[in-house]
Length: 307
Image (cartoon, rainbow, N blue to C red; front, side):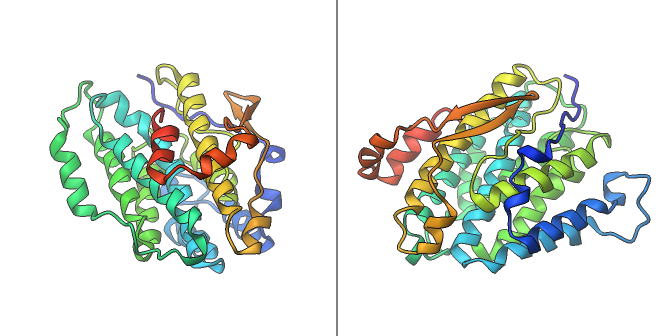
């Protein structure tokens, strides 16, 4: 399998122009810098990638803590879905990714439904116990030999830290660990080529999309994966359906400022393999009343089964 980055960016299709000015200015500033950690020859050693990432995540804290936590967790879900194909390729029988994704989505639905009185410390799985149980159920031997075991180790580390994000007090540090595995490590692809493009995708697509709890308008999938276009469409579809339910739940919030920030979209546009496609929400507006009667476990069974 040839693992290489594959990403092109269209500013006109991004959510970047509509995010708050302080965050937009920060992203533009950080994007102009060069980082030794990404093997950029222009880097002069004065800019720290870790500090830049931390500064962006801290900017999210200007919002209500629960809303901030929702955005952190949504960002985490996007990154987890980018890393999932790595684990699927080397360990196709490993059930860890889907179990952790289900846990993340269940948390997102519960927090969205109860935003005005949600305790960010509640409903957080016991991470050590949960991880140990899942790892003990899986044969973690690779069916395909990776070029470096760093690939699978760092991909699995992303899932471990994704669970830690569900505890607000650990969320920033856990996301920084995930970003380290992805941007500097081999969780998405090995080698030094394409690191800058991956950072640009996170800055220009993932961060603005996370602010609005929407899917990024282009989904990052490395070249060389089997069924690459199918994976890209599957992950993008999963995100748009989960986003629709979250935003619909947020519309029931008593916080008026939340309702105005997260209207329910009729459709979502994404770019797959360079083509712009319109994807419906997958749930008709007239069926929303029936969705309201479902509990969060049923939401998860319905919307995450295909992830």
